[in-house]
Amino acid sequence: MRRILAIAILLLASGQILAQEVKSTIQVVAPRVQMTNKQILATLQNAMQQFVNNRKWTEDNFEAREKIEVSIFFEVQEISTNNDFKATVQVQSVRPVFNSGYKSTVFSFSDEEVYFSYREGEGLEYQENQNMNDLTSLLAYYTNIAIGYDYDSFGELGGSPFFTRAQSIVSLMTGKPGWNQGDGKGFRNRYFLAENLNNLRFQAIRKFVYAYHRKGMDQMYEKPEAARTAITDAMKSLQEQVTSIPNSLLQKTFFNTKWSELVEIYKGGTVPEKNNALSLLAQLDPVNRQRYEKIKN
Image: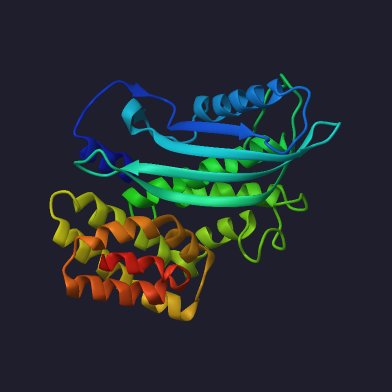
């Protein structure tokens, strides 16, 4: 509910209430796969987009312009004679920034171990708390994650119900490739993304997502100095978390999503603001340290 109230204030507009909450754009490509029937990719793409966009995922009502924008990019690497697919997936969601035409990327995640079966023309069925189809379980997982991040950006810890659902999907899929602790690269996988989002030890990062967007980005176009200060203060609040649990998946996910935006935010700051930001970012996101040097320009 806090998400709906916040975005209603943000939009300052009324309109027809629609049931569906997500506006997805899904793309499926297979540049390295030799195929005789390329139409199956277009059919699959359309079926997935309809599945995500036509389903009601929350108990809240959304206006058309409030819909959560999610893009999902599938690159198919293999298709067996039994129509078993192996692919990589990139998921990204954005949300509007108050009093501007700018949309801020809230969540971005790459998944390199995606497996599912699809036969052209088959229906995509889904039932919560049951795996009826590996593909729809995957789509439901990432849709809930994206909605959870969106709700977290409008209300502190507002995405909890959706992250709980995502973790429940992981439990249902245990043993299937791509859904287990040891899959992916290190901790970068579906299992640990859901686990971290539901783990109390990482709530500071989720609260940071809220402070960054509502106290920072949503104030940027009216009060840029105050907005930068709020973002800097929010980053300071993360220092203890980073010291106790360095290089966590949620920490990496946030800064890999936001580094270019942070550069633009602090480019407009004073020299002391820039230096303070660079010092903080070097601690919080050492992997992208060289990229943050652009703040000085």
